[in-house]
Length: 336
Ligand code: SAM
Ligand code: DTB
Ligand code: SF4
Image 1: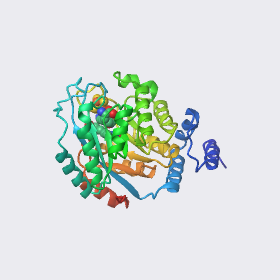
Image 2: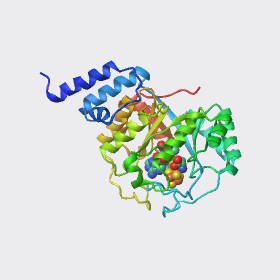
Image 3: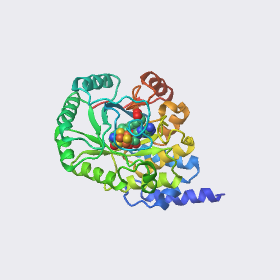
Image 4: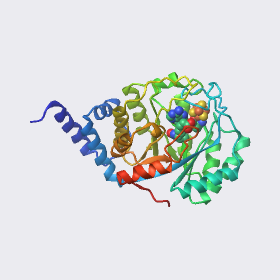
């Protein structure tokens, strides 16, 4: 006999069944909440079914990050080691020289990364920095890697120049829900973030946008953040889901740890609402057990950051990831 939970599941599954191959942009909070609240087994089963319709479940994309300009950022993002407003002990540096960037890209490629993501601690790029940044895009692309940059807010002109240089992806996270956003960042708005995403999209660059869990948000905030991403005119091609890495000296240094089950639920919801996007299990893996990462992959995560460092924080590194992939029978996605 069906109990209440199972019959709820049947209803949601039925609705989803009708729309199962449809990429929707009209998600309501209620639709999303009902999926998020399914029994854990049912939620993971649904997410895995959606995942298998669009992806090989045993293939994981590997992206490598490099901080091309570290620290000294004027923004006040409460989670960030690179904001000049907090004493995090991080040494600021100038924009990296092209050769150093290329050296990192060669090593990343040798380690099986297919995308190279270059990040700068800027509110937005300055015109004088653009020629050097555009050279990095051109030369990394020339090496046969996909290129991604995250440089803060862009003008239409910046986006067009990046596109002309051959930039494949631009990362700009919404970070959290619109209503929680002002608790975390005061120096730019949620609307500013969406505007940059629109400029990136209009320039023809693929969008990478996601957020962070562990910023003191509620379940409703997490759901709202994912609804915002899923209701963009096009789903972001990549959706990074970061677990807060609590950095000493930042306002969030003592933030409560994210509950693992809630984290997996968010991954599963992202997979179901954005069926064709790469969902990236991003920052925080160095503090996650193998079991938690395995759950995330089962819930539909199919991309990671590889290497020993993210931008400034630790990441598990190749050896640990090789062991994890072997245990789980996962393979890295092949390069183009
Ligand atoms: N300055 C640019 C910007 O903010 O758009 C690019 C770099 S910024 C570090 C990129 C993203 O990394 C942030 O939007 C945030 O989602 C994530 N991030 C930064 N610090 C983090 C931390 N301590 N834990 C988890 N994610 C973090
Ligand atoms: C994203 O969502 N996560 C990456 C990338 N996009 C730029 C950055 C994670 C940063 C983690 C903290 C650090 O290394 O400083
Ligand atoms: Fe600056 Fe980006 Fe860090 Fe915010 S997240 S303080 S914009 S580097």
